[in-house]
Image (cartoon, rainbow, N blue to C red):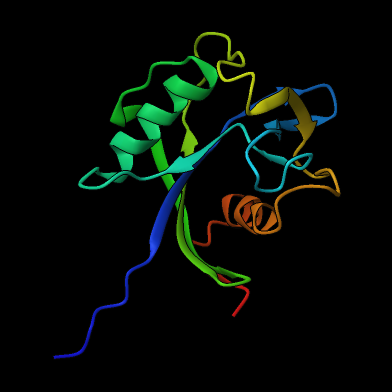
Length: 149
């Protein structure tokens, strides 16, 4: 019998609001993680743990990283990106927060140098490489992309 392909999984949360120049997206600036430190990432991004549903991972990560409590009903699935970067392969699942209640704050200061709103149509140049593709999926309604193959 063939060995099954095992792939790491991660979840990311797209949080937006209306701004004076249009829609804005909440981004974190990574630090102290060993992965893309100094780069911007979506406000919440983290690994799915063993035997954890995607929605539960998203809810857990939102509380751990920005201190907001969510329910599954507050999440809308956006897209899945099958990503290959270097020697690593991931299934990245992206969700949109339907409506933000509460104030996001940095909960893991050792991993996050900043939490900032940016115009969604002008993402920073130093952003984790597949995140603009996820934002494009959110804006266009596409639900699946492949990156780095």
